[in-house]
Length: 454
Image (cartoon, rainbow, N blue to C red):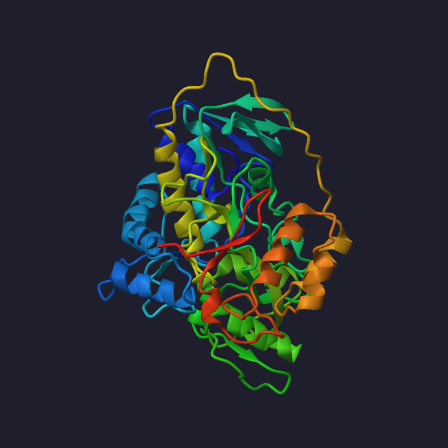
């Protein structure tokens, strides 16, 4: 397992029922990107809800690109994964929350806006205590090891590791953008390594920008606040949008106005103690003054192409969580489906990986020649400027010359998609086109392909 977010942690626990597991964590296991997730976990557990209704909302947010079979697996298994977490010791709040794009209250929270931290901490504690799981903290993934077209392990800063199955759960790449809600290390290392190893990537042009991040900060103000009645106000103190519209719509509305505040004065702020504490430590009094907010890069929808069992196109290589592209999100992720995706597909990938055959006694892995690519402030500024909430051909062409592999691949995908759909908006192609109701798939050494996934 490469990655210690919710997908890697839950996958490790699932696989450890039958196998010895090594979990590689770039940083401390208790401080993954998942621990920053303020949204909850969407699941049809209410009396007025059903997996079918959850699926309808997910497909609607995906703007014609959600893979129906992937959405069905996600929504059908959601209630069982909530039960799994409860049995492991996660204490969920009373009641269900409402977030943008959902037609029902179906979002389970733990500690208000601290859901990611509560879930990740419980899973990490279970992993650290498990006798069949060994954890290597502080090991950075450098590349994946291959032999005769098969993944046979990984090369990390701690050395080469052989394994009959390798599950990449390294998270997304939203920290490539100058303004982001992600920690600085979320730059798509796992995606790039998988691509170099022969796996395909898809949907890289779809990057979700969260509309309400504290100005001059990476502090995200959870969508759950708007679900409970917080409102967005322009510089004249007027509401200007539906606060629970899809995130791409709200984010562009906010960006177009420049100066925007989120008014929390009329909601029950006591439901979000950790978040209110963070605002107060930043010098704000949410009980008295609306909070200045602006969009930030938040979630990369695309990633390593997998089937519904987490298998990539390279034998022995699996992926799950934000670094994977099952097609479940389509062109835009529905709020609070991300932690759910980590649970559902982290488990599916881990259980599927158990069936991989043992490696030969002697493995002749191919040499690794890639070098570490630096992510500089200039690169981050370029992505924000040329591939941000609003894009055009001129900016994307500039990015295709970037000295960074994943940046070039993102720009190429965004340049090919000559339309605006979901979280991808082109001012030079501002409407949806039926010709692009397909996934842009990139494979090393071949031309990009447009594919329909059933």
